[in-house]
Image (cartoon, rainbow, N blue to C red; front, side, top):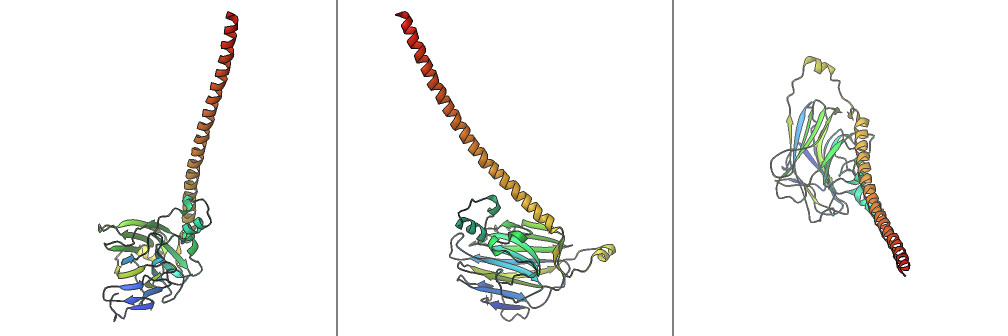
Length: 307
């Protein structure tokens, strides 16, 4: 990518190319930039390795907003989704560095629940069909296929994102610990992506900012042996989709409800223990007082008998 004379890539917005990298955005407010492939990808099975770097002067949670890697029908479109258009058609993998939902909850002074307990920066994936909006205020939670936390800011070692699409299975892994080892992030079967879409990467800053640097994007064709029957059974995909998306969403919501019930149960248990101890101490104090009064009366009656 880092070659100014490359005919395969096209820059957009505030992106700046050098011999070593493409700086999608500088560490300045209200910037957005992108780089897009000029050539569509017609591979059925592929693997993309992205070498990137996010760094800046902002302290934790005072930086933003993140970068995205795309495989979409549209290209070279400005927009609010990490510098790309909303209602996109295809795949987006986001490295989100700012917790919008958490800050919104805190601003309303509401109770912090497990529903908002995602550690940022956070990597997530979304498949759009041109009619689905990315919910920026909730950090993409309603349309998230899966994700993982990824502490990628201001690291001295290299950071990588790995995206594999094989047999309609989407796998995302990260290498961010400097150990040259991939760590699982998400693995979703039944992801249907058409051929002939474009790869790209984009980033955006708002009131908060970061340097978002793209060092390399390496695409590999994967050779996957298929039987004749498998070839015949694979219908051509024209619209991106995910099998059993509602089931995936309901499982996430069910897990969230379980976590909320658990923590609320923990909270109720703590309150119950507190009141149990309090009433036990009050009861013990009352018994001691009654015992002292009874003993005093008994002792006084005993003295009267002796006189």
